[in-house]
Image (cartoon, rainbow, N blue to C red; front, side, top):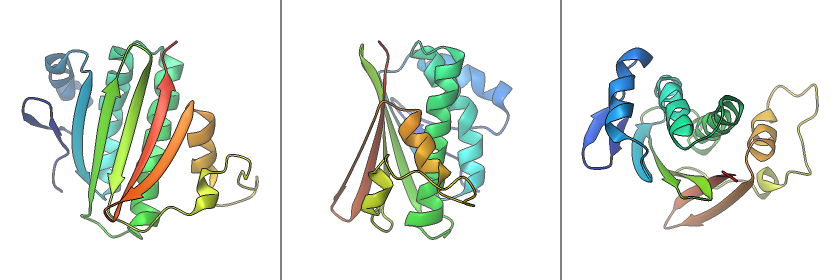
Length: 164
């Protein structure tokens, strides 16, 4: 498994031990922007969760808001793996974290299949007995804004969570 890397001033591997990841998070101290590179691998997404929670806390989100935004990001990343890449491992996913005084915006870039238009419609929730589809409902309900565009054969999904 290739490690998740981040670029701010340097490339830092994401460790699998959340306790070991804490010094890395302290070293980046409240980043206004951060670029993470990972691959279409569910284990990398799982390893990223503690770091996302820490970034949310550093941005000033309370524990519930951090949980919601992190869960929405993880759902979006898992959708990249499952739907954009059809489960194919090792494909690139970039995550750009941007914090301003007003919001946290997370842009997720992949080179997979285009996002179906119905995915962006929050008025079309998954059926209660559906085996899949609840991820988009979580993404829409647990973030304040969701946008999508495709440019240069690349999908860009942006999740925004307002801080005020």
